[in-house]
View 1: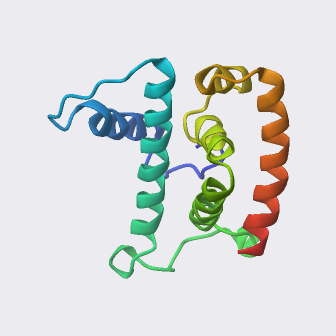
View 2: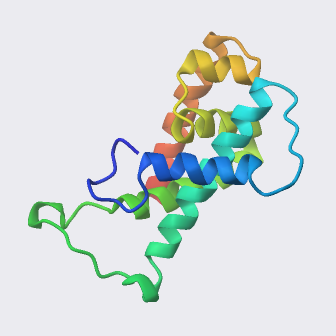
Length: 146
């Protein structure tokens, strides 16, 4: 969210609150096996919240494609378009390698460092580094190709 424009309607506090409600506030008895299971669920919840928010903002009822932009930003893609492209790419990556897709969720949506994400996934930081290098190149190509 650090790269989002100021004034976005979904701020970090709202995101965390919504994720909390999805993780524990729906009245069902959630049991997380360990810290890794909780962080994986939190990252997935935050991904879904951000994607749903981006899709909702693009609907006709919420202004559709009408956006106020600065003149120097006209040629740049909007953060919502980039987020939706990232979601599509992550969905494709999950089919190829679910662990690498989960690494992206933990780093991008949960904001974990490489070492923290490696611990959550139960892999070495070196393996996480290699996976991250692969994923960055793969996502860059996948997002450009969408």
